[in-house]
Image (cartoon, rainbow over all chains, first blue to last red; front, side, top):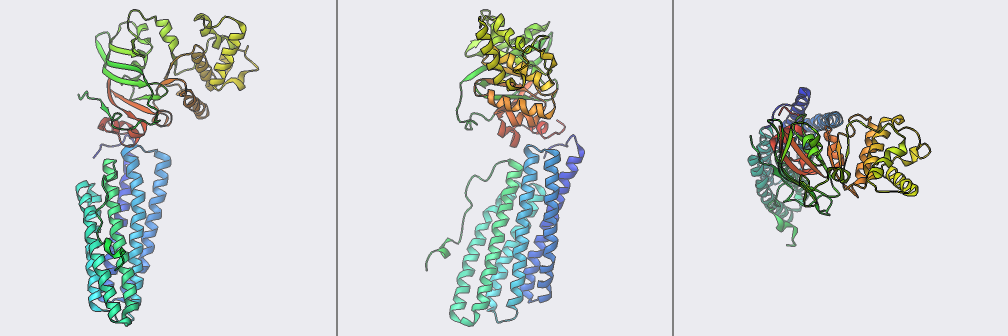
Length: 234
Length: 271
C-alpha cells in the first residue's frame, strides 16, 4: 500500500499489531464455529471449552490496547498510520464482543441440552449461524488483504442475516405458541438468534473499519436493513 | 514529475467557518537561484486571520516561497522571482511598491531570535520610529506596552524595559522579536521555524501566542515539526522538490492527505 517508514521499528510495530488482530480474529472465528458445533452436536464439553477459551480473546484485546497506547505515545502517528492504529483498536473491541456472544451462546446451549428443543428450531439457529460464520470469515479475509471491495460486499450482505433472523424469530414464536413446554428453550433460542444477529452487525462494523482504514472515508450510505417488520405489532 | 496541486479546500467547508478574505494570492510563482529553478510555479491563496503552515523536507522550497511574500529574496544575489504574488490584490513585485513599506506590512520572525543589541524598549520602539508611526513619548510607550502585551511578554519584562533584549531567555527573545514585528502594525506575520531553537515550554508559549495573533493577523509559518503544524495551523501546504504538492485544511492533510507524497512525508516514510 505504502512504502516503509524511516524508522523501521514502526513498520515492525504496525505489522505486529496486524498479526495480533489476525490472531484475535482467528480465535473469535473459532469460538463462533465451536459454539455452533456444540449446539448442533449437543456437546456440553465443547460448550464448556468455548466458555473457558474466551479468556484468551480478552487477553489479546488487552495486549492490543497496551500496544496501541505505546504506539500513540511514542510514534505520534499521522494520516494512514493513525487510521491504521485507531481502526485496529476498534476492531479489537469488536472482535472481543463477537467472542463474547459466542461464549454466551455456548452457556445457553448447556441449558438447552437439559430440556426438550424443537429440532427444526435448532436447524434455524444453525443456518443463521453458518451465514454469519461465512461473513466473519470473509471480513477477516478482507482485513488481511486490505481489500475494500470485499469488505463492501460483506457489508451489503448483512441484510441476509437480518432477513434470516426475522424468519427465525417468527418460527420460534410459532413453536412457543403451539407448545408452551418449549417456552424455556424457545426463549434461550431467541437470545441465541439475537446474539448471532448481533455478531453479524459487528462483522459489518469491521467491514466499515477496513474501508475507513484504507480510504480514510466512512461509508457514504446507510446499510440496507432487513427484518424491520418484527418491530411492528403483528 | 506531477505538478498538479491537490487542493481539497474548495470541496470542503472552511475550518473556522468564517471564510476570511484572501490576503496573499500567488500565481505561477517560480524562483531561480542563478540558472537553477528552485520553486516550480506555485499557485496558492493565503487567507486573512488564518494560520497557514508550510511543511516539507529541507530544500523543498517552503522557506524560499515564504521569503517571496515580503521580498526577502531580493536580498539574495542571483535570485530571480517570476509569476505574480498579490497582497490584497496588489502585485507586491510591482515597481510602485516600496519594499520597506511592504516589509512593515508583512513582518517576519526568524528561526533564531535576533533582538537588536539595544534595550527591550528600543527593540520594540525602533520600527515605529523609523516608519514614523509615532512621535510622542506617550505614543511610543503605548505601542511598546501594547506590542509586548500582545506578544505575551509584558508581565515578564515591564519592570526592566531598559535592560538589553539580548539578556532575555531564548523564548523571551523570540517573543520580543514577535513584539517588534507587531509594533509596526503589520497585516501578515511570516515565521520561519520560529520555535526550532526553543525548548518545549517556550515553544508552547509561542504556539499559544500564534493562536491569539490569528485574531488580528494572517500568519504563515514554516516548520519542520509536523505536530506543530497540526497544532497551530488551519491550512497546510506541503512542498516537495520545489513543487507545491498539496494544499488543504490541516485536519484533512494530517488525517487523510490526497497525494501519496504528502502521505509518505507526514507519516515518516521514504518518499
